[in-house]
Image (cartoon, rainbow, N blue to C red; front, side, top):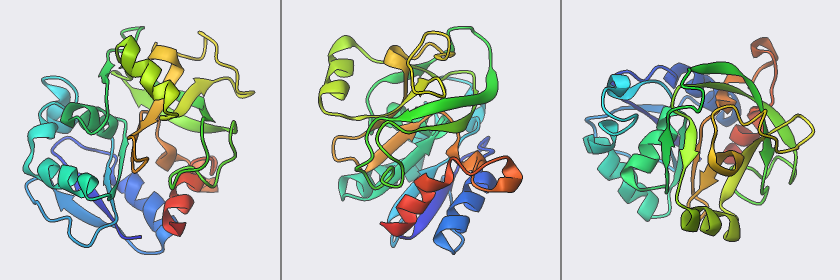
Length: 227
């Protein structure tokens, strides 16, 4: 699988993402400036975290109108894979590639800490190297990670098994205490209906090497590399 990383002004997690992808893929990903529109030859397009355009409007709202996003949407419509992490998830909701929105954290504070995610399904290209119901550690670093959607959308995500990850305890329990940003139904990440677009708020790319403090996030990238 060939991967590319989209760069917007203010994005600051592209090097972390490149390290994670190269560690699993064996080759460096292509870096794509947001004014470029060429994603030809790529299987996977990744939109990393950060603060695209300074988050001066809504998080991801300005980036959603960059030229590259028309190419990313076309890539997704052709069946290509797309991964959006943190600000990338926000951008995917702003473009309509994923439903819902990311609001201010319930605490109204920026959250920077470890969290645990439960794998809701392990039969996708992104998650098949985890076990169903497995929990893993990830890094939370966001001010607007409070996932929101109307009840019908949330029910559809549940019914169609499009919830990828939830915030839980290390033992896999959903509790208000671990849902620190206030996300609806403790949702940390969701899939598109064809399971080829994934958006999540925590950063799996920050735990892909023992020198980073752990490798909990590496199975996601290993799964993509093996696809």
